[in-house]
Length: 306
Image 1: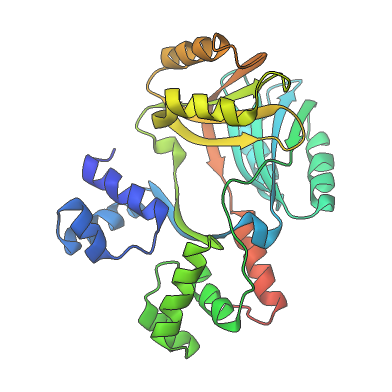
Image 2 (image 1 turned 180 degrees about the horizontal axis):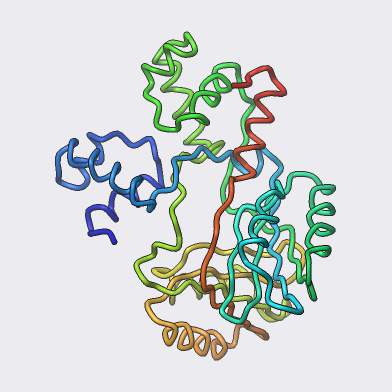
């Protein structure tokens, strides 16, 4: 459980995990030492899983995939998760209340999607695989990485909060060049400096994924997202808009299951959608982020390996 100050720290670190203790202290009204202690507590408790540098979709040619798995018999979850963990495209698996599973993946080349699809269709006891790939991107820029950028990223992938002075010692670059390059990457949205939170620690709230479809002759995904933001923006975690069909997934949190039912009814009565299906998430497991692996590969390809 977190209090308002710790939640404020989490929000600031999600936007920029490199935010200094001094800046966080100014924002929260507590001392830098207290901020440091709270961050350490958030890490020890597992609320912050890790600090991470995520390259933009345009830098890595990233595409996402959401797959809904239905089994003929309830699988042994530990064995299933162990199997899915070793697929390099899978970064998250959610178990639904009705016994199905949702697999979230990221791929960078078409052959990786083909491999993932084949892999999922051969799981023990699999009955149905419902797959959605190619989602629209809503953030990210692209720049030509210089040797300075690459050297800095090599350091920050290992430790996203590494100080500029330590990066200078590691790379031999001037501190002014390092600061300017990091600012450039953030401002251009070439990379996101953020945290991975444990979504299972959402203070007892229920996690829901809504699948929505609409009539393209009557409305658009922009209208639907705007309506969702106006009505449920405070609950939003993420959204995934298909680039191939009129389908989007809206990911949000509610205090009680009954709240999800109210939202489902309101969405259905909005007149914007022709189909809505709720996925009530019982638990989720996160794996290593394929985007970080891809960035490491890109740096290795250019001679900037660890």
